[in-house]
Amino acid sequence: MGSISWALLSLSPHMATKPLVSASAVPNYWDPSVTCREMTTEEVEFCIRKFGEGAAIARRAGF
Image (tube, rainbow, N blue to C red; front, top):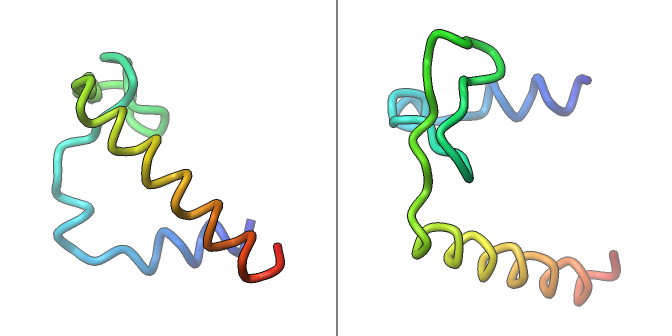
């Protein structure tokens, strides 16, 4: 739980004000009165690419 708290506290202010996105238009987990914007196909593909790049970096680092 501590690492999650640290990650949330480490967010830059502009990140906290951007519209929330999700794979589909669903209520926000922490604030159900807010509906997340559905990601475009291009945004999903971008996230998949970035996840793969991050996994490759972690593997090269020995994880």
